[in-house]
Amino acid sequence: MKAALYMGKHDIKMTNISTPECGDNDVLLKNVYASICGTDVAVYKHGPETGHRVDIGGEFGHEMISIVSEVGKNVKDIHVGDRVYPYPRTVKGDPKRAGTVGGFSEYVLAPNAKLNDGIYIVPNEISDKTAALIEPFTVGTRAARRSFPKAGENAIVFGCGTIGIAAAIALKYFGCSRVMIADISSGIR
Image (cartoon, rainbow, N blue to C red):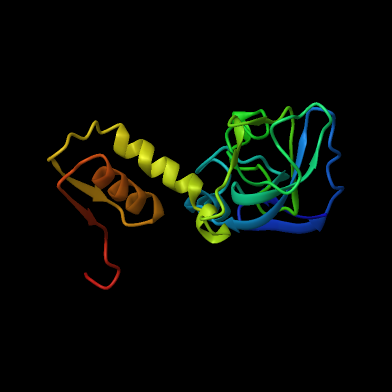
């Protein structure tokens, strides 16, 4: 299979590696769409100590939408053809691999796969492109929730990237009356 391996600062290696073998408790996922996280950009530009834990030589990428390609004989709730969101902190069974899950590879092996614990079904109403944004939207929603918003309050979010926009949407959803987002404009000095 084709895979993008993170080799360090300014070094991504596109290569062919063996397709993972699906064991009795595993699920093999075929990636159909991936997005590029700000952390991916940071570790590419500045090295592996600047974002998610990204292993040198690890399969790069963690924001993706996948189709179940193969299911081990002991897996009951996940089926071939299911469209799923693999949660990067748990899909590989190792939260330290969150940045090198294999989102830019053709396939990802989910060991000891469990539905709603590392693998989540994506409803048909959500496009692949939108579903690839689930991970950053969970981050923004978590940040908004941790601010303990109350109905009727106003809020401001600094940063208009994907996560900032997600936080603003979540704050509105949680009941804030008005939410403003602010960021730096590169055209203003």
